[in-house]
Amino acid sequence: MNHKINVTATIDADSKKVWDYYTNPEHITQWNFADPSWHCPTASNDMQVGGKYAARMEAKDGSFGFDFEAIYDEIKEGEKFSYTIPDGRQVNVNFKENNGKTIVDVAFDPENQNPEEMQKGGWQAILDNFKKYTESH
Image: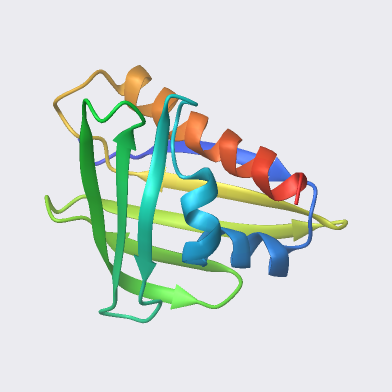
């Protein structure tokens, strides 16, 4: 029952840049959505244990939107962090540099509203968007 869903991407950039682009709100708003018809108008990130991460995700046409929030449990600067979202699910994000590229691995507890394939697809799409944004800037 207590398994996690994993998504991963290899970004063609060093881990310092990848960490910065993944955790800095000015960048988060540029990539944190699964689909071009969505956007992330605001994000804030208090990157410390007990600190809060918050991002607003909404459809560009204004038809739907939600706030994603989490509290940090553990942070190892440049390497990994974990946080818990309000429903109690935990997310672990790892950054591993290899020959100038960085592997980002995200493991999260599934929710029970949607099929796991759908959840995995959504998170993978966001990570793929992150990869595209980071490599092109």
